[in-house]
Length: 281
Image 1 (cartoon, rainbow, N blue to C red):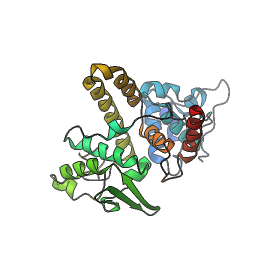
Image 2 (cartoon, rainbow, N blue to C red):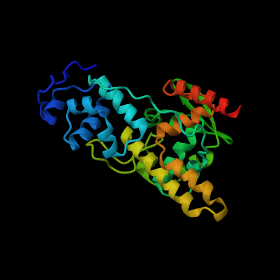
Image 3 (cartoon, one colour):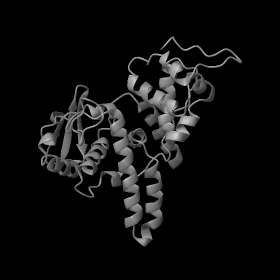
Image 4 (cartoon, rainbow, N blue to C red):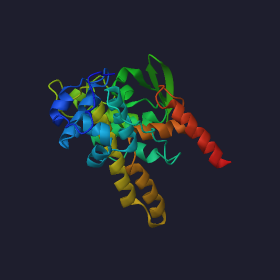
């Protein structure tokens, strides 16, 4: 935890926002999240004292952050030394949700197929964003019936993902930079970083943005293509999809009883499973 933050004394002015942030160091292991938190605060001319006093509500409203995102950045702020109340990480609501529409192939656009393959694999191998960011193609093998995912933590069989996987592999192999990439979810365009390139490793933020775009587009397609008799069901599903983050998607997968592949979220998933069982009784 950073030791450099000291709140202003009562009735004393706080330093300018930029100066206040420059006095602090990012918590070890959370440099990227700290930088994004600082950038969001500076857009509103808010310094560390302002966040410690008001919390992240102004940032959440300006950035349209979901509850899970607010919980994450509150933890990062606390790790950096800011004295803030810790919100409880939200449980999945609803407890269960049909996620199959997010794994359905609806076109040949590389960005679409990349995210469809991600969602399909996550139904059987619910890794974190960081785990998917680091997942290599040589760790995923396709058999005639399922995908096999092998990592340092073990081996997993993933049924139901072959269609999405083969569609993504077929399209990416049309582009030499993507075909040569070692990553399951490579970059499709050059980003702002000096080392970014087509086929390179995506950032965590880029993956989260990609997922959000996918769920919103899927929600719009569901609403536009639903038959009149299914309009109400499609509207309800689309409404839930539009609110999903990848963390929420992953918690819903874990809540369905899929074996966790990382400690993060496993306890909450167990609580959700028990809650669903109580509601069925």
